[in-house]
Image (cartoon, rainbow, N blue to C red; front, side, top):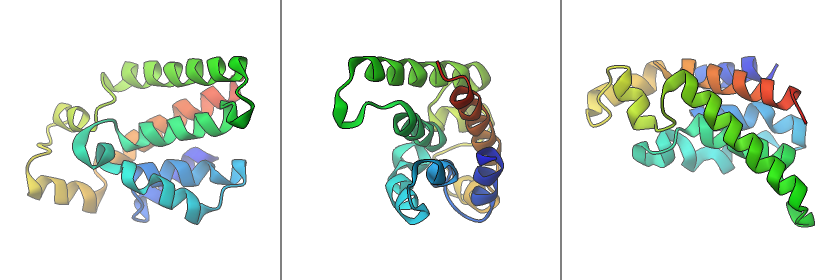
Length: 146
């Protein structure tokens, strides 16, 4: 139930990237504290409105599951890349983009307006939907293992 855990963590005050990585951390023997620290700088589109934090954290989870690690196994590397590309494809199908700033703009939020961004952070507007979508896609990909 990582999807539900991710949403719960977001609503408790964690960022989108922290929520995704922390929700899946137990599956990879990763301590929640470590997951939160690793994901902290990825929130808000790398704090720059770039790639969405939920997307970058999902990419980290895909790496934990499919990445070759120190083995340098080309099959595992190709599989990890393919799963990452598939995640991005499915996310774009839902949101048109993986760019945090553009996602917000498409939802009528001006990412350059400090008041709107403060409301977004306080109420988790939109981000709860994004985290849910990212985790739903990720859950499906992890189950589809090739």
